[in-house]
Image (tube, protein in one colour):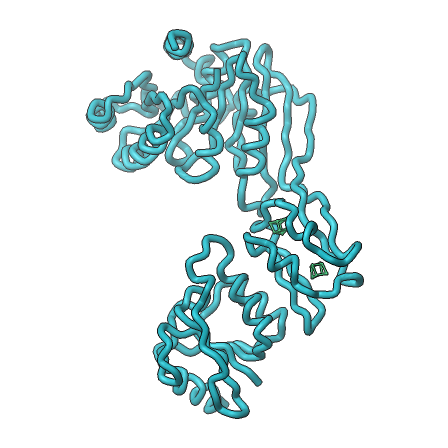
Amino acid sequence: MFIAVASGKGGTGKTIVSTSLALVAKNCTYIDLDVEEPNGYVLLKPEIEKEIPFNLRVPKIDEQVCTFCGKCADACVYNALSIIPHLKKTLFYPDLCHSCGHCTYVCPVNGAIEEVNREIGKIRSGRSGVVKFIEGRIDVGVISGVPIISWIVNNYIDSNEINIVDSSPGTSCPVVESVKKSDYILLVTEPTPFGLSDLKLTVEIAKDMGKKVGIIVNKDTGIKIIDVYAKEVNVPILLKIPYSIEIQKSYSKGIPLIEAMPEMKVKFVELIDKILCENEKN
Amino acid sequence: MKAFIPVEKNEGIDSKLDNRFARAGYFVVYDMESDKILSIEENRFKNGAHGVGIETGNYVIKSGCKLAIGPRLGPKAENILRAGNVEFYIAENCTVKEAIERYRAKS
Ligand code: SF4
Ligand code: SF4
């Protein structure tokens, strides 16, 4: 089973929720796909066994051999190349390149263009007790995390096991990529007008994708703003985590929520049981 | 020298400059020596999804123009024009004719 923990924006408590779930689910894999700023490791403190670079294949032009015919740039539908014949110059925009290989394929000149590796991030894996830990991270300056997210989703998720994925925040391509194969999406939000408007966007995306969704309210102050909306769209609120200075403090010290507040542990056990049970029914 | 000028509609020398460079309606190529419009072509890239600025920049280079007159460019297109030694002159809210005059009048 693949449970995705997501939120419309960062800082809603996605990490607290996903790490707590992983710790109560025990024999599971925790996968941090918040690739711009993965911080699940702060709470899970895994022993890292492996760190591998994540590379994309991109073109490299040898300006000594290239005839500046421009065929490669014409073939690139993503406009990632510019050829300036009169000055014998070539320009490449790595962030636009989708590693499709067309440019290399169409080049008529032997040895003018070749594919090379461009490292855009790292994948770390290890263990935190019985929890398997996987983390994707993109290097500073890399614009899109989508390739690394989709690689991890396609290669590291064993659907026979429980996988808890800490998704990228937001409502754009990275989050869609990290939840699209999920069986259940847990949306973490705060009971504020901002929290609500972000939640609405993510609920819509999740529903469009035909996913099962549940809401977790973090920093609950008793305000019912999320409850009203949840009822309207018929999405269950599965858990409320109270607003508490203690929780913030333990988070900043790297102590997982369920250790800092044992009463929350019970709730998370109930939550994971409920989700797993529902999944089995299908 | 040829100049590359993005315009809204094809109205010859009185065409109004478009305030979007890469997503302009038409592209004018103007010959500064003979003082004539060499071509006015519809912008084929304007509805593209990726890298329209680069596509347009590549097109300017291919057109052989050494001067571009129009609104401010995106950083990538600007980068291409700079790499291609294409001079860039900012002009807005005017016709092709006025833009050429302004360019010539600049000190
Ligand atoms: S297609 Fe090959 S030879 Fe032509 S410009 Fe590109 S790299 Fe150079
Ligand atoms: S690999 Fe594909 S996307 Fe990248 S530069 Fe070549 S043609 Fe463009």
